[in-house]
Image (tube, rainbow, N blue to C red; front, side, top):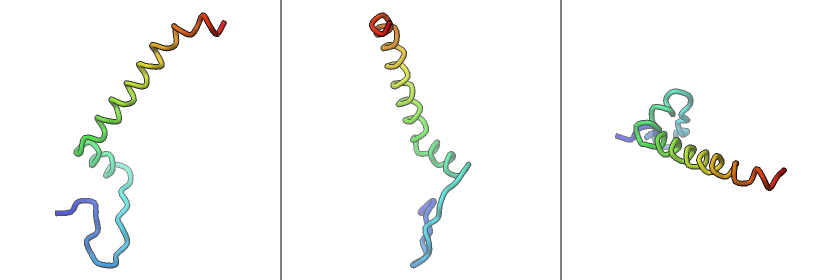
Length: 57
């Protein structure tokens, strides 16, 4: 079964909005990957902050 897609010929594509998109992202693992990427960027910003603070002042 094709989830999130309209299988009728010539029909307009189905747009996922709101909770439907969130549920699909959690089910496919996209949510977890997004969180891990966000945490990786945050850790780089946190680690880089104190190192460059004396240079900036």
